[in-house]
Image (cartoon, rainbow, N blue to C red):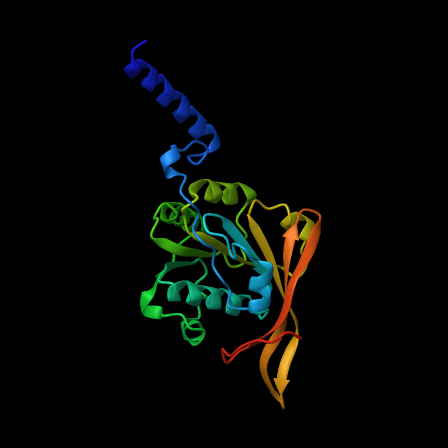
Length: 239
């Protein structure tokens, strides 16, 4: 058999495998480079529990919470640190809720942040899949608002990622009645539940909140860290 015939048959086989299992199922060995380092959050107690990779690159991280929980502070601090490491950051703002002044107060350089506002959730997912193929990106945020992507959509996003790809953070606001059992089964490398335990007060003023972060695993929620978030952007402390 000629090498050209063998190569053609091999290419057909690889195309069939990738069509069924995704483009990342079969890759040339030359592409299997060391993974990018993960992202730090800037909250020491949480970062210590997320070692060695932190928020993983080349994978989906799902962040779940209810409003006023501290989740956006956690996300903005993470993105600010990514920018500090010279990473490019793209933010898909599905519901138009990105808070530019507060993001800047958390250290994000707005002039270096690429903000995308799609017209529909489907367009947001399509944009995310396309952007995940852009290797220079260090972090891509898909702020899904109150519309959690389906398991099938999350699997497609996973399939678009490569070992050298960016960290993909998918943000979702949960309804008051939520099923942790269902959420723990979602196809994401890391699933973090961010909860506000109480407000921090100085006299009559609210200056921050106490936050607990749990990792959702199949069948259980694993507490990772509890810490204080200050709205003025200053440090946090262990309770």
